[in-house]
Length: 478
Image (cartoon, rainbow, N blue to C red; front, side, top):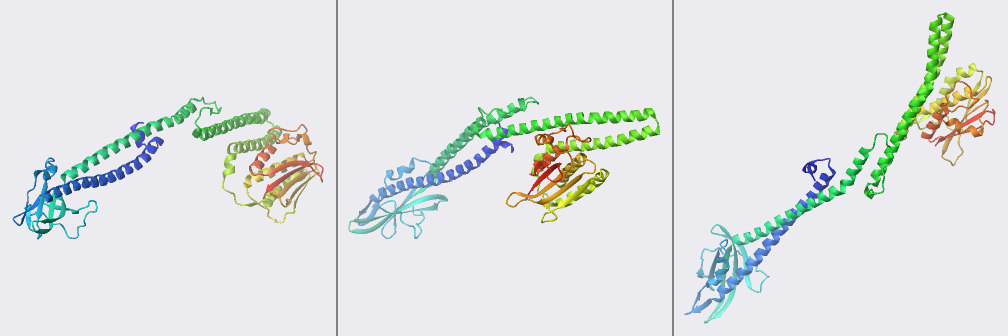
């Protein structure tokens, strides 16, 4: 594990180690505080026991001579502390009346209400104080005396400076700090090494993806992949497949555009050269008229190709768009009918609209522009294939109750219709029937199919029951 990874905010390994370091440091601090308290309590317990033993030794040396109390403090009573130059011991022995028999008279008195310890079967009190500007620990021991006609309680006080206790506590604290610190450091090192090994498959996966040539969209093998990485590998494979499909669509669009536009552009170029070469007004007018018609057809073809490309590349984005505000399907149908009314009159076609929906507005959710493109393509196909003097009827009515469809739109014409075995083929791109009317590009129904798929619209082709031609039915979702 490199040091810069630990401080890199975007490093997964560094982030894991930092998250692990915080609780370990907290536990280290807590453990140190607890260890200090335990070691301090243990040192006090050990040294208090020694203080009590010294007080008892001194109390045993108290005797009555000539009706008075005397004490000879043996060196052994103070020897427990004298060997340790970090501590010093003081004592004081008082008689029944509180008069000092021996020892340091300026030792501080035990505070009132000092509790008797319950740790030992003796009348002993322990407390902390200051003596000669040094902290001390004192043991006040009471012992009954019945000797030489005297009886009462003698008091033996033994005090010890706290340097030795503090030294012992600090020693235990240092051992705890260094031991726990070393444990935390080793834990972080082991975790870092383990995480480096654990994250190595991710690095190897990245290297494998980088080594792939630009045109290789094959799936990454998952045979030896760790189970935790399977979702990531599956996501990468799915993304590569989508990318391959998108690239294939762009290549197909480029091929379709070059194939479909090459002929009209060549025709327009030839017509322009012919008009310029002849120079007569009649030929130029005729060439310009043909150029206008060819340009109109080429513009329509180009728009259809661009719409198909947009549908191919952005279909998933269309699905995830925020919900569109509702629009009136009837208004869109009327707008398309008015746009094609002049073309119907030129062929003397009876173009009619029937609305039998309960809600006259017929509100619909979706992309209004794309729905109108469907209506325009269907009506344009009907106008091209319906002979002069024919009939085209548009119908809008409610779907049968109980299903998931809200309304039905139909467009029926009196043209030649489409044979049942050919009705699926007409939705393929650039597919045109042998007896199809001139002027088509073979893209209209392909665009209709894609838009219906995006909007969950059921489209079907049938024989026209009333006019004898083709009946196209669209079933819109509720």
